[in-house]
Image (cartoon, rainbow, N blue to C red; front, top):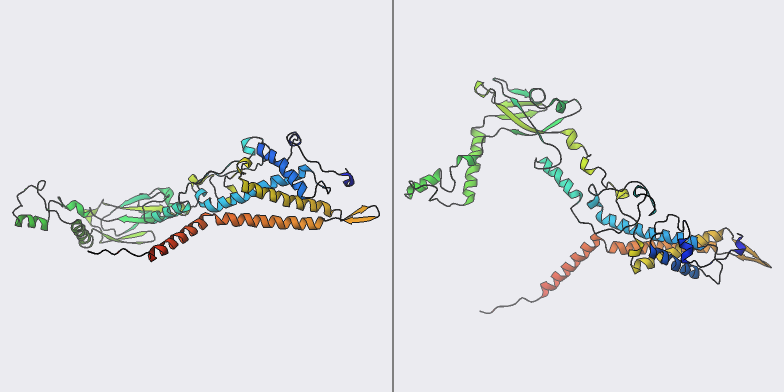
Length: 407
C-alpha cells in the first residue's frame, strides 16, 4: 500500500483474537487482560502521536509489538531485581531452566511461559557451602569423604612408608592422586575412664571422704559435690601427663615417610597405627553431584515472564509510557525514510529524527526511574533503613530522662 494512502484504524478485540500472531513472540496472547489492555494502549498511543489529526505510518500490529516488548522489559527489570536479592539463595540449590522458548504455546520443553515469582525462603545460600569447607579443614564436616588406614608395627623398624606399607586401597595411591593425612591416632584412652565416679570421690576426694568419716559409705549413696571445673582440670592434668610421660610413641611425618619415636620393640609388634586422610582430588574438586542441573549463574535462574494480569496499576502505567516511547522511536524510524514529503506546490519536512530522539530519551528515563525505585526497595537498602531507624530510636531513648527513686 502506498504511504500516501495509508490510514491508521483503531483495533478491535476480534482483530486481535482472529490474528494468528498478533504479537511477535505471543508471550501474553492468552492473557485476557493483556488482550483488553492492548486495545486501550493502542488507542492511547495513537492519540498521543496525533491521531486522528495526523496520519500515522504504523498500524495497530506494530503498537502491539511495542506493547509486548514493554511488558517483557518490565518483567526483565523485575527479574533482575529478584536475581540481585536472591541469586545466592538459588545458587547450587534451585533447579535451573534449560532451553529457550518464548510463547505459551507448544510443549513444556519449548516454552518458558509466564508465571509469578513466589517469595524465596532464605537459607544462607553459598555461606553454608563455605562453612562446610571450614568444617572439612578440622575434620568435623564438609562434603568430602574422610578415609582411614593403618599399618602394622614391626620390631626394630622406625620409618614406615604410608603409601606402600599401609592398607589403604591401591586406587588411592595411583600416580594421578595424592592423599592428605589429617590425623594420626597415638593417644591412649580418655582420662575420664580412670575415674570410678567423679561425683562419689576419687584420688584426693577419697582422702577427703575418709577424713570426714565417710570412707566406708557406699559411693552410690553418699557423695561429695564439687564444681565441674575440678573434674575438667583433673582430666587435663592426667591426659597431659600420659601424653608427655607415658605416650607409646611420638612421630614425625615428612612426605610419605612416618618416623616413630622410640623405635618399636618386640612387645609392640603387630600393634597398629591408624590415620585419617583425604584424597586431594576429591577435596579440591568443585563438581558435586548434588549441584547438577542447579542454578549456576543469572542466565539459568528459573524466572519466567511476569503474568500480565497480576501487574499492579503502577507497573501498568510504566508499561503504557514505555510502549509510547517505543512507538515514538518506531514511528521516527519509519518517517526518517521519508525526510521530505512532496505536496502540491512544495514539500513538507517529516519529524522522524526528532521522534527517534524523543522516544529513546523517554525510554532511558523510564528505565532509570524503574531501576532507581527497585534499588530503593532492595534487601540491602531495607537493612540500611532499618539500621538508621534503630539508631535514631536509640538516640531518642538516650535523651529520655531516667526515673529517680527516693527511698
